[in-house]
Image (cartoon, rainbow over all chains, first blue to last red; front, top):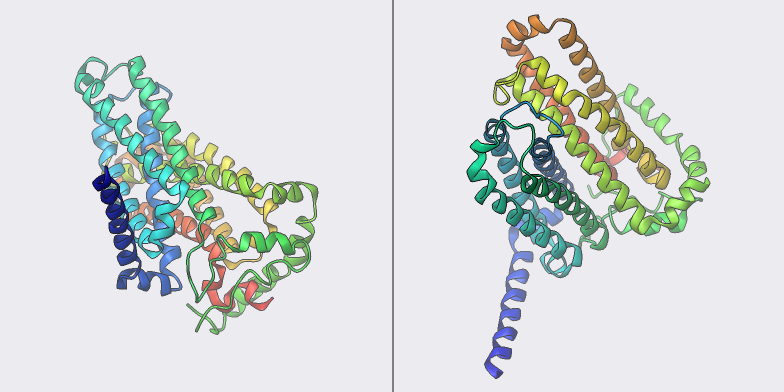
Length: 211
Length: 193
């Protein structure tokens, strides 16, 4: 048993080492020190996730027969899903770049872990569809909606992705980035704002930008 | 970014108007709906923001499909009119949803939202993008044959389609920048406070 404990201990140390290494990398400190880099990464992340959720919702609504019911499913999927994947790649890259700026905090954050778990669930949900109904698509391709299992996958998909958005927003609310130059107004100043409202709010919340 | 740079006179006027929103924003923050949201901000604000983000996903997704169709990159088994009929109502519905959740966010955090350059530039672009969407769909319904046969093949149409998508992308960026309005330097009304 002793080696198991030791093994777990060394795994923890390895992870801590990796997180530390990520945070202290030149790339991470460049993003942290930039005035605009982090907000722009967040913005591109939102654009990416809007396209991911927007395009997946189109497919899910087709499975449910709620929209585009007259279009063959296969044609729609091949038309749209490549853009979904491209947008997902964009969110993955921008997400990773945000992660490294404060790796240790994000890694231990409850909502971050929840979000990663939800992404895995979304992947499993999608794979289960591809391996079953997706392979027999010719049988229902032109039907106005998918068989019941397909509808279940669609509802699950919509629910999971909305939860992903929610969890993502909560990461921002529950972490504050270590940024000396400009304390993040996004997270930390929320409470400040409310403490000072109604009188004189806002004055304290926006730090003067560095030259 | 232009910290210390001087604004063109017209924009400085806008800045003045935005700055004068402060008494209104402070009054708004004392009203009972605002106080309610402030007292429940730990869940209410993230929840409203998440619905707002789901809304922009529907908006951007719908715009994206119409733009791809105009470019000839997706949905070519559908006519332009069919594409607009499929996504137009979702665009409209999602815009109403965003107006409602956006209003709640302003009520919940009046000073944080209203006393920013980002918010007002965003509102201007939202108005512009909405006008583009309405004009495009009306014109398409009236002159669908002209759109299908001539206009869609024009480079100008494709360029305008891409520009429209970029306006929506800028709207998302500005939405995020409300939380970072200091990046505008002296353009941010909060900098003068």
